Image (tube, rainbow, N blue to C red; front, side):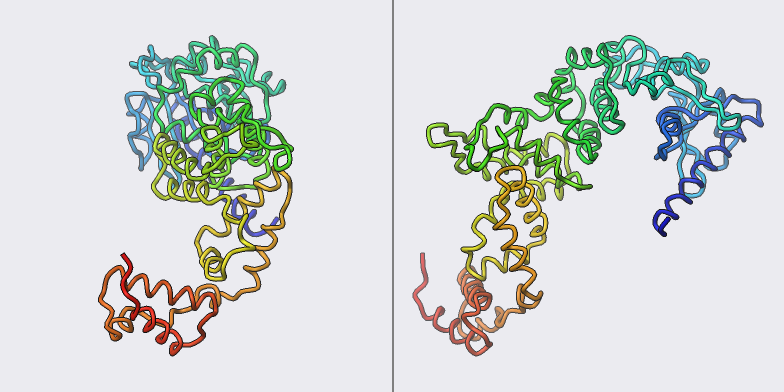
Length: 450
């Protein structure tokens, strides 16, 4: 076990030990207290839980009175956060929910017993409780059996469970993907039946589940389930439109744009959400620019794809940084196809760009998911490695003060001359400050262009 793994192991142990301490404290006051939800599932699957949630017969005011540091996060729903060191634990009172009218929150709750609490939860594998003191599983919903069967099954009527919160349809797919389980047939049929209602869920919540689907190593499986379940066309219609859009067989022997996209995203290894989104969206400009009469050309699909990517990012409420990154990568994902013919100045500016490594990786993935021609990628990587940081981004020989001394007024013309002189420096056409001043003088003497 290396140092990083040792730290993670110690943190996980401290988190579990803290949850156990909360449970023991509640029990000492005569309350029932158990672990609940995903942590129970993960414990039984011998996976390391991300969080530990506690359920108890204690009322919220009793929980707050028992622990020194608490935060009200949903007291009317029976939920209190207990703080231990830098960790937060949700401690929820056993409850039964009243009707849901907004597709997310119940109109009210009634404090209940553990069986009723289990019956209100989403899927059987998430509906079990665990007694860590006695080492016993409390299973009112058949979750243990579904774990053995590797099934994601809604508790009770799946249409009712999804009607309470339509985001659960995305959660079903995320759980099936990350656990490599199958969604039980009636549950999946309910996904198909209710798929269009996912549009009633906020972009922020959809983004959160979509991120979980896309950063997982089984993301292709997740995307195919989104499509098969009818959700893809409602949350990412631009991606769904790639299905059936044929491409030239010489460059794309893998199939249509959808098949190319699936293959590309499957090749990523532990990518960020924004980079996975860029790969997923890199060819969404092809369907609206397809010209079947010209050998499957998709003229300007990069620019169109950039505009579409920005609209998707706005819909999903992505940050400005995420939006700009994704849009830039989509807009320029074809740029390395011309790298061997670039001027030195153009190439060096490309190498100096903060997104060069991501652009290069996107080009590599794009090529590997099509004709597997990596010649441009190899050229770019080799050219980049052959240049020092100083050669790629040297300090300019001249600045605005130098041009002002030559009589050039500040403004667009000064900026243009500085840019041309710096390009000459990058192209290695000039090698000294003296040569830069001579070139600047020559450019300054030329009549201004309109």
